[in-house]
Length: 163
Image (cartoon, rainbow, N blue to C red; front, side):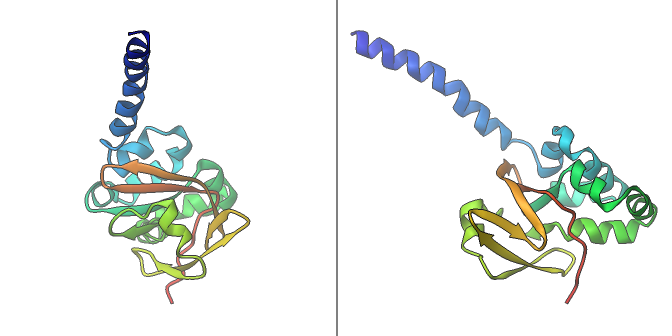
């Protein structure tokens, strides 16, 4: 009887955690980014480029640069992009791959291959010493599940390079 009570208590403790994980997937990619203060620059840029609706529907894998990644681009360049909606949209769509969200385990299988982003840019995926890179950006956090795809956090802003 004690074992049964212990199992029941453990189940009650674990159930809220499982529910919380499922709840994360109730938000779209945009809603998830809005809820994370490390993406405030990205969110502002997505809004300025009128991409909220596009990234809220469909299925996407998004390589999301942090605020720190945007800072590395430089204030002047970011301000210029914010004034040029077309160029800004090009930079942002270079971070999104259309289609079913690609999880980290699947990205590992892409080592040495190129992925094409929504703007037509191509970035090589490399895996070395357990670190995944897309172009020159390192993936620092993986598999943030969203209602319409997945976010992988990167440490640099990808610039369009249509080939």
